[in-house]
Image (cartoon, rainbow, N blue to C red; front, side, top):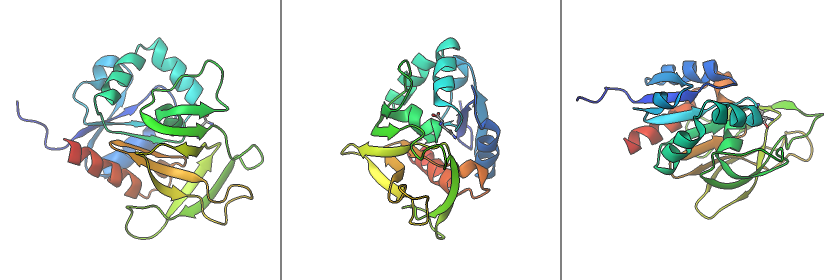
Length: 207
Ligand code: GLN
C-alpha cells in the first residue's frame, strides 16, 4: 500500500481544546483527525494531547479504553506533543495532582499542576523558544503547569520571561525528549503555527 503523502496526526479528543489543535495542524499541511477510540490510533504518525483538564482526560481515557493502547503507542515511539493538560499527561511525575490521577508518561519530568496559582490563573507573555525561527512566541498560560525537575535526556526549550507574574520568572515551560514535545502554554490559541511546525518536523523525521 502506498503511504499517504502527508502524515496523519491525531488529536486526543476526549476533552479540551481539540478543535484549535486540529485547525493549527491542518494549517501545517498534515492530515489532522480527532481520536476518541482505540482503533483511531491506527495509522497515526503522531498525536497531540490538548489543553483541558488532565484529571478528566485521564479518567475518560480509561473509560473509553484508550489509555492502554495509547500508552503502548507512546512507549513504542509514537511522537506526541502535549500542551498544558497535555504536558501533565505526558509527564512521568505530577505534583499537586489528584490522589487518583494517572498520566500516560514517557517524559522524564516532574510537573507541578496549576503551578502559577489562582490569582494569576491566566496570563500571557513572550517566550524565547529554542528551535523557533522568527523571534519569541506569544505564550498563553491558562491554569498552567510548570516543569519543576527534568531528567537527563530532557532538553529545556523555553522558560517564562521576566515580565511574567511575580514568582513565575524563569520557570521551565517548554521541553523535548526524543519524540515527545510539551509546552505549559497553548500555542494552538494564538494563530502562530511555529510550535506545531516543530512538532510536524519531529513527526516527519520519525516517519
Ligand atoms: N489545570 C489544568 C490541569 O490540571 C490544565 C489547564 C489547561 O490545560 N489549560 O489539567
